[in-house]
Length: 67
Image (cartoon, rainbow, N blue to C red; front, side, top):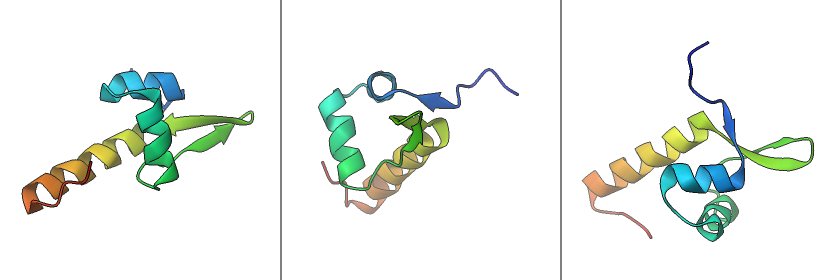
């Protein structure tokens, strides 16, 4: 396995994306960021962060970025 982390807590995911925890919770609520439950706690998979960033890049290219 590579040195890449598999899952992040909400605060860690916020730091990875350079946004607030509130923004992460909003993205989760809006269905833009997928989470998993580990021992009854929300976790964000690395792949979910990558998918979110890919979606932002596509929207930027298409001129449809939503904030």
